[in-house]
Length: 273
Image 1 (cartoon, rainbow, N blue to C red):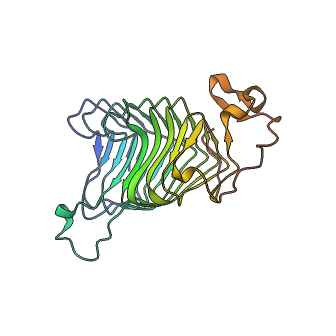
Image 2: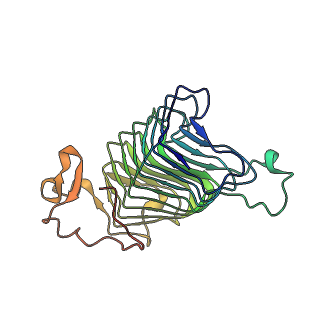
């Protein structure tokens, strides 16, 4: 249990978990201006399981939280403020089977991080085209939900051909050029997200239902799995949102065609608000 620490100006990760360490909780960490990630989980064959990062401030590193372990599972990253990543992503799920590195590993090793839950974070101000949340290579069976993602070029990016079964729901995305970019992967599901920027969906197996968006494009943006979405330009923002001009996207009582019309996803606990 790592709690209430301040780490800054380090040559490397602010905090890095040791090989074989499982069920570790990092809470209340101030990690900023380090040369690599605020919190880094480097590549190890042992995997890291059931780890939690919460209530932490992670700023101005290569990444906020970098999960590179190819066998990591059950990471819970929640209620953090993540700012200004300059290389990987605010939350970087980069669980990759490196063939040269892993070729001598035993057959019981299962590659591909899975069962990540990324929820209730503030993620903003990424440098240049660095995404706020990136899932790539071998990530599977994970959820990105109820995050506030803003002031980035790219909000959420999924770009691994082996990425599978990712649910993106109930996020608020604004002042991003691209809110969501799905360039590769399968069984990517998006529900109940409120956004003002572009959405680009390439895989035709994707699901996009009950979202608000700025614009939408790509081969996966039409079809049987795309329905009941609304362009922000089609809404009278004065009557739909409490204070749209100041980024308050709570619905007013007059938004009758949106209230209680989202996709019900269980379990659903109170959100970051």
